[in-house]
Length: 184
Image (cartoon, rainbow, N blue to C red; front, side, top):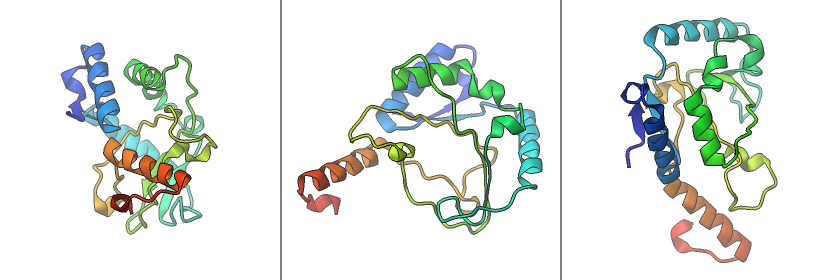
């Protein structure tokens, strides 16, 4: 199943694009949409984010990183992202995956990973909720990259559904006291 798409392939047919993205999310656990923003807009937004991050201290703990800057409450500091947060394609995909038509848009954060930052521990953002696993999806993230993801700039690691399934089987084994030697 394809998990990487160019926005130009379906920007005039969002329904077709939505179906492909939803299928990728269900089968792979992620979808990458390239060229969603024009080069000019990407440059302008990156410049605005740089202006904001230049005023910030670096991270304060192991999870955030000590060489990373985070712009919390991003929507309170810039209006540049408003239309992205409520883009029809994004909202329709979120509603379909979460199975609800009212969602809370929260945690808008701009992140600039500094050179030499230590890799963040693998985690799921729903881990902060005391919900027994497995459970339906309760969180869906969108990420808007303004630079290519590389090892030198703190690339984000995407864990496909296969690894998620492995993680869930490990959790289930711990609950029942069973140990699967393949999952050690």
